Length: 134
Image (cartoon, rainbow, N blue to C red; front, side):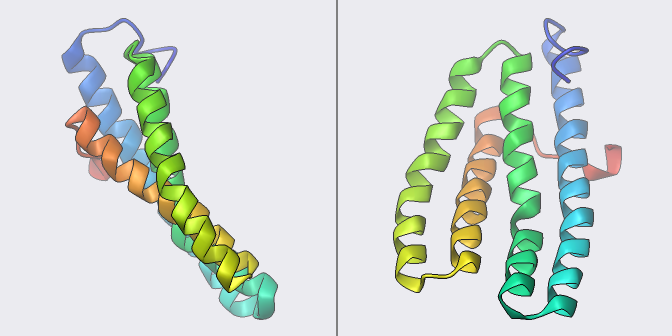
């Protein structure tokens, strides 16, 4: 995305971003499903951590896709703002995770706050991820 769609027309960029963010969701969901199933099979604390990672992976990959998309468009300021949203959401989530005191809670806090920033990225860009076009 950054190499091929930097400096292109807005329409080309928007189409590429819809597809690439859709790909991020598909890959995150696919690998997340594998991680979730593996976690359920493994069990225990390690299994719970794998399951939590599986749940949050789509949001993590989508947030990352927004960051690269904004840099490709030459609006690094939007990437920065999106990362700030993630950081602001992460602080209270980490406080809650610290009270719970498990690796799973920290993974859910990290990924859940990334999902919040990913949702904000949709609002920032005005683009809906298009998994069907991925």
